[in-house]
Structures are given as C-alpha cells and as structure tokens.
Length: 305
Image (spheres, rainbow, N blue to C red):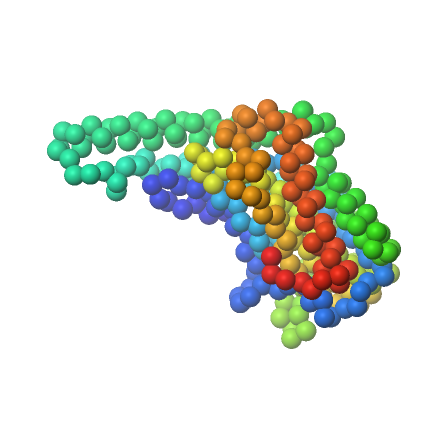
C-alpha cells in the first residue's frame, strides 16, 4: 500500500497494514505442540529495491500489495508484474521549504528568501527526479555486480538448516498455481473470523505437522531525499496444521538496525558498494531466521514484533 503525504517535503510511505480491524493476528503457539515435521512453501525471488520513502514492515503480507517486491515469474505461476509507483511527481511538490521557519523580514528580503527557497527546492527536485530514474534499474545493477545473487534461496536454505538442527524433519513445498506470495489456505480464526481469504483453498493437505509460508521483504530505503539509505527488512510468517488446514496464526518479524549502521549517503554509493551492500542485506534478512525458528519450533513463545 503506497501513500504520499503532502507536506513541505513529501515522502512516499510504504506501509504494510494487516487486513481487518483490531489487533493483528500472531502465531498461536498454544494451538500446537512442538512439531516433528514441517513443510515450508517456496516463495518467489526477492527483488532488489532502493527507494525514497518511509519503510514500515508489517501486514499486507501474502496480498497483491507487495507483488512489486518480488521478481515476476520466479516460481510457479507468479505474476508479480507490478512496479513501485512513480513518486517523482509527489516528492517535494511543495518547494516552500522555509516559509514556516523564516523570521519576520522586510518585503524585499522576504522576496529574496522566497526565491532562494524555491531555487533550493528546485535543485532537490531535480536530484530526486534523477535518483528515481536511476533507482528503477537497481535490481539489474545489483545482479551485474553480484551475479547469481538470490536472497530467497539463502533464506530458504537457512530456514531448513535451522529447523533440521533442532531435529525437525523439513521439506520444501512448491509454490504452484499461485500468485506469490499468497496464503495457501484461508486464515480463519477459531471464532470464525477470516483475516484473509486464499485463492488456493483447493490445494491438498501435506504430510507434515506444520505448513509454513513466508513473505520476505528487503529494501534499501531513504526516509527522505536528504536522508541516508538504510535497510528495511520484514518477514511475514503464516502457519497451518499441515494435515487439517487449521490456521495457527500469522506474524511479522522485523529487522532493527542500530542507528547509522551500514547506511549510504547517496544512491550511487549504494550501487557502488555492490557485494558489500548485498552482504549487509543478507545479514539483516538471515538475522530473523533464529527468531522465526524459535517461535515455530516452540523453543520460545510468540511475541509482538
């Protein structure tokens, strides 16, 4: 879900909010015993994205609103052809940057200050336009510098390794006949409330205690045109009883970086970092794996994240 807020400096807000009213669902560990077997549904290839806007990892996982964060056709019948909306026309639409901050002045000096503010805004707008155009090719720029990079594959491998290290037999289920990522079965609570419908309710059960689906998002984002690029990473997790299709909860796990850690002042410096930036993003993404495995394996209870 993309919003633009018209203020003196406008930001694109990327906000993923869970469907429905009230508190979002979380994984209900009291509904299941520690699993001996788990089937993880494969997910689509993650797209490398650099954007200007405020990134908030949260809900709307497993819906069309996050298709832009995945590579079209990378698994099953995935059709994530959407692209992040153009934001050039919205960024800095109001260039009167200093109007509310300027001290009382004479008419002449006020006119001069207004002209200067307009000039500054125009310069920033031009830089924003140029950066936006270049950022549309960020995925290709990354693959040029890091051929074969697949954060999705790294994530799936890490999840499987961590579960198996806990003695849980783990298998990967093909993500077939589905947009990606989408819930395999309905997310229906015991009281009958449906958080999300599912286009693939016809898909059969699996021979596993738990069926787990993931919706991983990893982007480099700058809150505003004059801010550093930093990592925004969140993994949505949905659980079902693999044999009965019972919904066991859905939860988002989010990465939290230390202030100023691994940030880039310009888009060009982010691109030039190539393998280094890719490694930093991989580190952030995989840092969430132990948290997810601990909850799903019932090593620790689920908490709001």
